[in-house]
Length: 261
Length: 210
Image (cartoon, rainbow over all chains, first blue to last red; front, side):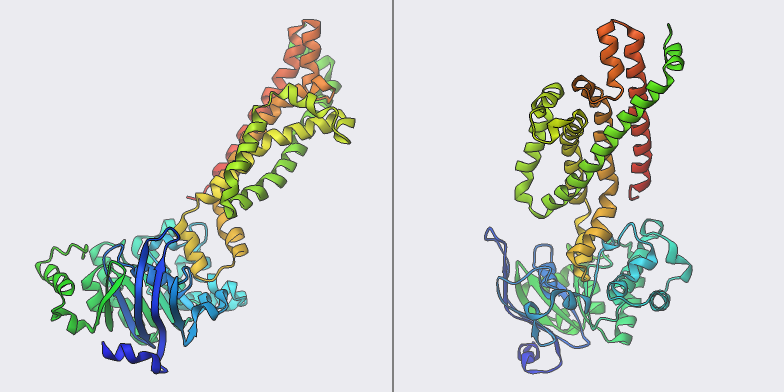
């Protein structure tokens, strides 16, 4: 993980946490002195159980939360120095299927950020069709509403929506968490291929080691608001750190307490 | 004389009082929505104000309607015309359901949906108009529906201060000890209330997000 520690001197760092802590107003600390760098084009997985601070970390990147101390840098600039709306529109955001707007058609859901950015209607329509193809959905689906889709389709729409305005950075908060095992595996494979092809810097939150190993170019293991360590996937399986080892043991026995598929 | 005969012999007056009644309710509901919906939205942004504002609207509701009409008589400008008093009183009664349902409706929108919108860079205004209000609309309409039904009933009492409306027949009938005349006011008022309830109920159902 030494290369990550030194990453602030590299120009190829897309997102960086510098000694970031996050406390709630009434005092509970959700994140302790996080130092972490995400290199351009890589897929960093934040792995941990609920309450470990992984979603908190993610929301600090697009400023849904702001650090109590320390700094989050996005493309070399403190997130707090960015124009808030500009920052968020440069960052694709996908969460579990509940994040789709239930009153919007698939087309309006996917075309949301382009519409906010004032693209002409024609261009948005073309972009939506392009994205549907990219995520493996039929073009006829555009007029449907989220409730008329299967879980897997909804999630594909969620990914397409995050990619719509071609943001350089993607944040994904357990995007495949609510899917059945088979559909999830399918989407994971497709997403991996897509991410490699598009080269988007991605921060991906999950509690599932299997998913982390499959998708991540690095895995940052979080526990109780602290970064335990950062591993390359192959390092993780041989890690001696007790918590990482416990994840691996649970993974091998197949009864992962983290709810693996 | 039957109720039917009364209606056919007094067609013009029945019609006029019904129109007066509708005007009173319609104008006061329009004002109540114009005030109550923005106040309800504001409360979702300033949640510390929720308890005092809804508390005040609640207190107003507890004032007996006849007393409220009386209280407003000496009010400047308002007190000069009975119709103005009636409209103001109906607005005051309608505020609570409208404010409360706007507040509850917006607060009830799935936080994950709102946060997704915010995370994708929607401004506060875009979130309000494109996400929060459309998803809260059926709850807001439900509040307007309750307020309208209450107003149709309350507006009959406005006749006591000379504001007109179908209450005219009710008070006249009471004075004459004539049930047919009382019913001539009560039955159309009840029908108006049922129609408003039914119509707004349909609207509410149509706007409900699935």
